[in-house]
Image (cartoon, rainbow over all chains, first blue to last red; front, side, top):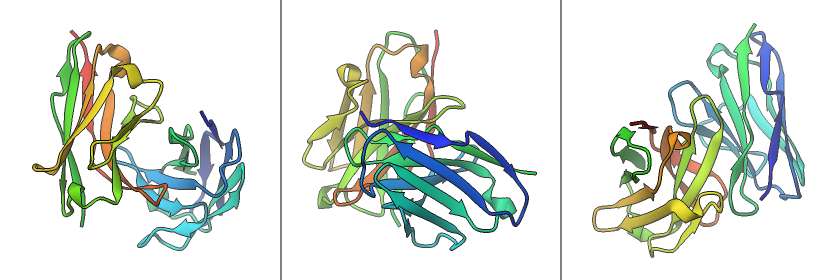
Length: 107
Length: 120
């Protein structure tokens, strides 16, 4: 099975900051990497699919990049409503696997 | 707008079988084009994919749970279901149903999740 390693596991930033989360796959997954936002008590919400494509309706301050084994998720200007846990997820091979999550807090 | 809704008992005794149903509205399971998945999240932890089913009944299960999992579909009710046998406290989690396109890799619609606690 493919393992996904996210870092950092938690992050504290100020409103307006640029925030970056990384995700590393244990083997080449091409661009089959997705990013989700999960707020407490809610289901995950798809933000980015296929590494860099913004899901419809998602604000443009969210972006993703990368291919192969190394991927990056960026919030260009952190907003208070972005406080959540973020997960990467691969689907190159079954079973799909998620990273362990990055908890984002406001400083 | 597609909506998914999980239902089932919130409390299951150890060694028994956990049973959940996901009702889909706003779209037909039998129209094809999507795999219908179950995903769980242990309290305060990450996400674990359990398995999926296609409208035809073909399934794929996570090897880590395969011996205990059965996913079935009822196209007449636009529902799919999860059965997890021989549960222990380690199966206590929020269980989500979700959809992924057959030509996509992302879970685009999710249910709100249901907490299942395994306890005597």
